[in-house]
Length: 389
Ligand SMILES: [Zn+2]
Image (cartoon, rainbow, N blue to C red; front, side, top):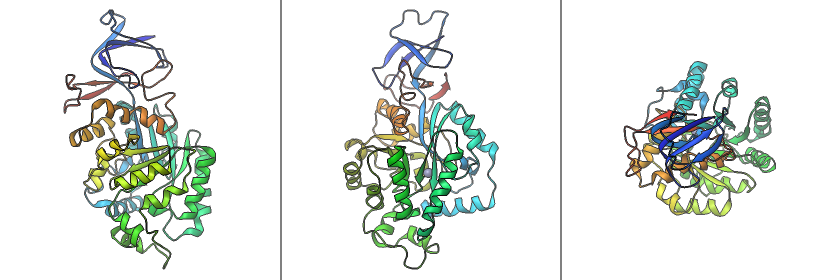
């Protein structure tokens, strides 16, 4: 048994606790939470100045791109970003040491669980022995127009998934990189297995032009991959095109949402009941130099969670930094931000029975935030993290 106390504990589910003590066992399971403990400074309590919060859930990363850190020029927009990453994948071999470092770094930065997009097996072994819980989203994509290969692509992903001995599910990369046949196969599998699906959503402005009219920068970028006349614009937003494929039996994580409009949010919420809006502000600023308009999502009651995306499009894999970016750009209470960073992400990945809040019986991980402004309860530039459990 270990007793850990702090000035303030934010359990996420339940009220803040001043001068509380958390009792954990050797497996870091929460045994008890003692309020206003008189013995807080006794010798058997490890007492800290600062705020204890549950470990963070990062709902969107591509661990396999950790070696791409600093190699892609920021501010190119999504088509330029995709061009760069394709080139890097063709020319620079993936570096396992960088992947391993990123995994350790995330752990130290208070991350307990990650939703990890992957289309290779390079991270498999590192993830299986990591202290972090990983849900691997086996990402499938195809050149547009290549609909004949849907079954092959899907079977290929299934083989990948079967070779993982931990949690995972098959997921479409983005609406512009999967055809209807492939999308049907993925949606059917998710419906039957009730496993979460994650998709890059409305990340660039010209995605709308592509789906609406079959034109624009993203469309031009993909033009040389198209078979003649094989791309038929849906005449809708990308979201309106792909969302009806999915039915309500499983969680659906919509990633980025940088250009999502209120009418899209309304459409989506009427169509699917288990939506999670995964915001990755660090990556959005890196690629598009723009952020999703967060107040719309708050106002419309969306369940928001957070992700860092990968080192290909971010300078850090810290969820605290993502919270900081949002706090600097919008008026959001820390308590709400913390829910996005913990319990909402845990719900998105179907792991909230273990992670996401400090509650007896859970193993949420414990993170100490030092240097916060405790009067206003906000993150400051000095706020840093110590991983306690
Ligand atoms: Zn991504």
